[in-house]
Amino acid sequence: MATKTIIKKSALKTEKQSSNGTAKRLEILKTYKIYVGGKFPRTESGRFYEAVNKNGDVLANVCLGSRKDFRDAVVAARTAFGDWSTRAAFNRGQILYRIAEMLEGRKSQFVEELMKQDSSQAEAQNEVETAIDRLIYYAGCTDKYQALFSSVNPVASSHFNFSVPEPTGVVAVIATQNSSLLGLVSMIAPAIAGGNTVVVLASYQKPLCAITFAEVLNSSDVPGGVVNILTGKPAELAIYFADHMDVNAIIYGEADTATKKMIQEKASLNMKRVVWYDGMDWTSPAGQSPYLIMNTQEIKTTWHPIENIGGAKAGY
Image (cartoon, rainbow, N blue to C red; front, side, top):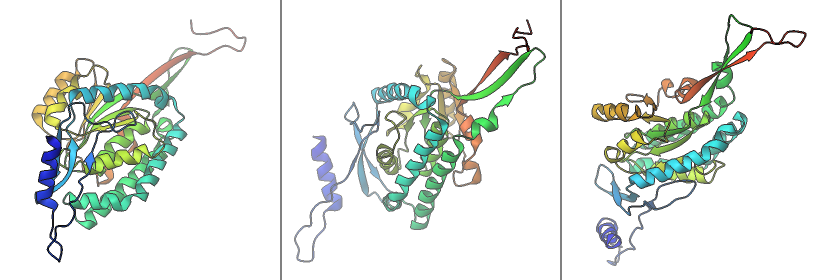
């Protein structure tokens, strides 16, 4: 029944007459599936919605994600975390750079999708190029932020005292709704550059670039489960992002007061770190910074006794 409905609606909007009066072939609208564990499954519920632009043109059929989809994505992210967080920082940088390379190779496709979603050609071109540059920026940060934010601390006893940043774990991201690509990339890149794995809810109004970006990830060197991308309604799924007990941090890109209050309350159940990016202009210099990596890092402090020349430990 759902398939028949799609074909009927698509036919009404895409069938055109040729010069000799015969009907042209119908446009086949792409179905944008979710991205979980390095694969493109259909949503568990079987639900979908039609993405439209401001003119009412139907652009694609998009999966309407469910609570089960989110749970599956968290399992995939947790499974991938052990390998991703322990990789050499330089290797993570190589992989982020590869994502930028693959995005550069499909730049024209992203520009076209952004224009379908109401951006001008100049705006679309700038957004794609900024997203590519942002990935390269964070690729360069992966082996530098630890040196920048680590410290050797002065202590009164006979010990060395070191503080170093470590990834917090699985990060749930509710992306900004008014940016199809740049906001998404700008929220994912610093989290994975720091060794976290992520589950992202893409823009409901502008979802096209999110799943096309998942195709870029899938064809690059990113291990399955490091980035998981869902599509659906923030009003429906936000509560599941906030109260899942195996999520270590949540990033919210909107300014809805009621949702922010709910996230704070639910996040307290397992002491999730909560990060707000409402009001962030991702095109500004503030949209990229090593401090954004630190938003999803924990500081581990280690004490190590200093040994005397003779080998006996001091400070006891």
